[in-house]
Each structure stands twice: as structure tokens, then as C-alpha cells.
Length: 202
Image (cartoon, rainbow, N blue to C red; front, side, top):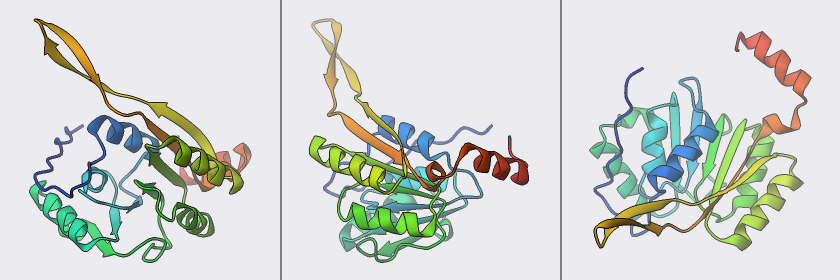
């Protein structure tokens, strides 16, 4: 299997990108394949968009701020991601969201209930939301649960080592809350098994 190149973010959006370790967990939960249409709400630096474009067949990235969308575009180019593989949309979600997404990532909390409603209405299979504030995480969990799309809640934190007096100490990043679910949660095990058999999957 070819090695996926590291992601470079030479252009700054004046808002921190999703950290590499958080991206790794997020992408594992999304489980993107070449058959998927992936949508990101709030592309900002484009960090998640870039990595998703290396996995998914189609990518749509929404960003409400034109200057941040330009940063996304420039970072895509810096990582040799083909413009044809990513559709950049200047819009404030849920406006601009496509109706045929297979997987959706919310990197911010703005209008997230409306985005979830759209995901439910259009049958998005996998939805992941990352949150850094405890109160918003609680609201997000409630919103996923109320719509019967909650599958998993995880809280994780990464610490990075640095040299201190000839030894190694650690700086801790802020914790991240990950809320995951999607349309598949509302279907029973028998229905999901039937789909797997019909699709020839393992």
C-alpha cells in the first residue's frame, strides 16, 4: 500500500488547524474509501480536506469566510491536491451542502444542529464532529442523540515531548471531544448485514 504523504500547511488561516493526531482519529472514524463523497463544514486551513482528498473519490469543502477558503485553496496546491478532486464552496452551512454525501465532518460548532438535520434528511452514512469546549460537546451529544444518529463519544488528549534539563517532559494539548454517528446508527444489525451481503463487502 502506498505511503500517504505528510500534510504541509504553509498558509495560515489565523485559526489553528486540526492537529495531526486528531486528524488521524477523525479520519479513522470516517473510514473514507474511493467510492465516498466526503464533505467538510468549515475547511479553514484545509488540513482535513487535504487528507480526505487522498482517500475519498469526491470532496466538497465549505467555508463561510472567503479569506479562509483562499487559504484552503493555497494549501491544497501546496500539497499537490488536484483542484478537480475538491469542490470549494463559499457558504455558511447548511446552505451549500450537497444532497449525496456519504461522510461529513464538522470542524466547528456554528449551526451544527441545522447541519445535522440536513445530514439526517439526506441519509449521510457517517458524521463526525470535533469539539474543544465541554459545554458545546454536551449540546452536540444531545443533538446527535435526539436525531437517533449517535454512535460514539470520545475524549482524547495529546501531549508532545520536549527536552528539559537533559530529560524529556511533556506539553499537553487541549482535550478534544469527538462525537460520531450517522444514518447507519438508526438501522438495525439485520438491515446493515443485508446491505453488506448485497454489496459484496466483508
